Image (tube, rainbow, N blue to C red; front, side, top):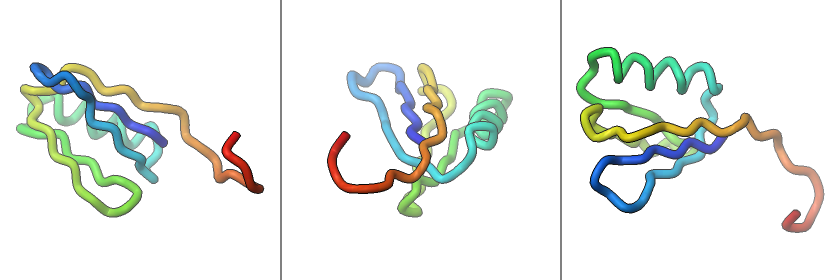
Amino acid sequence: MEITIGVRDLPREITLESDESADAVAAAVAAALAGKAALELVDSHGRRVIVPTAGIGYVEIGAESRGRVGFGSL
């Protein structure tokens, strides 16, 4: 699934693909906003993304994507 994080005072968002469920990502965001110093997520390639909680403007959690079958770019 695609996750987009808007960071305050930055013109571009942070976008990453994650293998986590939408509920797990939402729980991580809620925990960060409830008092943790940072939001920490791991993308589908194993890279860790850490955003200070004070800098989070918004988090958009996309729909869970299913594997594509076949050829083509549709």
